[in-house]
Image (tube, rainbow, N blue to C red; front, top):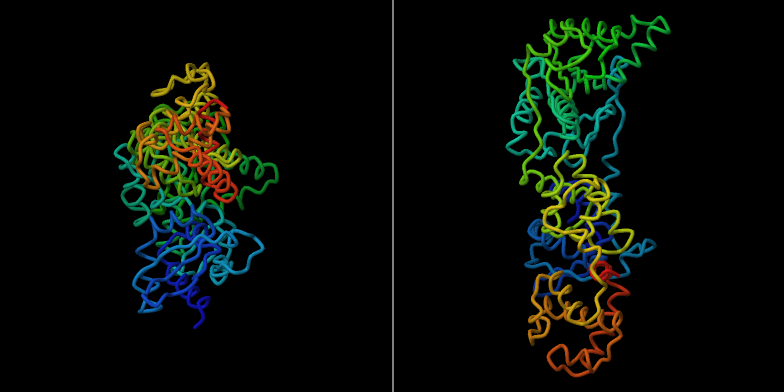
Length: 480
């Protein structure tokens, strides 16, 4: 078996153990270079970023898969091959091709209500509705103490639709995850009961369909499609306010489904008793079932959400930066995701990494009245651009979690040497100090040492994207 075929066999064994998006992101354009006589498998990856992520997250799984294919493998090491990052290169594995065998095939359209597909992939057969966002599942919902009850109730409903939690009414402020849980119920029901008919719709869309049906004098067809479902999911019921025809139609639909033991799940931004402009008959029916409130998540849950979103965005962000965001965003989970999305976008466009300073500026842009905790953004804006080498050294040391003494000292470990060389490079580039003076600042080092550090950093910047982002982030911290 060639190394290419062997590597494809390894990847096929890994596929069921890693989420599809993550698998494609980190194993695309990888290659098995060789298996040495001592049992060490050398895996080629396109970037240092990919090497660090795979080695830290998937080392055990990868080694196990390699051993299953070749029992002589005892260890796995990585080699960064820049040519694999070339889009025209055909040497690396195209893992997207592995998923083509699992392409969805449309199988049916149910009563003009729920168009579904069946996916026959490495994770087994599953039913997916085109009406629902398949990313919204109970597994992808981050559970904390403030939303544990809504999650538990939705899980129970998914396992036994039409049971004791019927109707289920979920309420809370905007951006807390109500729609996520509502659609998750639909996805889980389809997974557990593929033959069930699920209908998801927003109240606004329901009103539009009522108006259209009345205009076309086609209410019979409208009623038929809504009253022949097994699970009815209605989002943002507060939009029914003062829309009498829609309320009346929904009232009759509700009664027929409830009497037939069909599951009804409703979301709103307020409890049933506080709904304005709604028929009292509807409010009383909402309140007769299970009513649960979605609360804004605590700090730990917000931090967990950010970490989970980083995986979706395929971004690695300093934990201190994520903690800073979690501490300063207090309005909604949607805003939390928005800040993170902008931070990732800015870092990609400017080839830098998100820092506390950059995310503080994003938060302030989104809400000028907000008080930033843990960072005086106004004071930082008025700070002068670095004027001397010690200013640069302080910024670099803080960025890498070191002390200035570490940079000046004689430690030759990589985690200290690289920041030291970057610091020398920045002092030379931005302050234009002589090599002799920089060497003197760094504990009396020879000017040739400084020259080597500057030239090495300059060369590394041509091929190391992570280093480019670090240097650009440092320049931003320096006010440049």
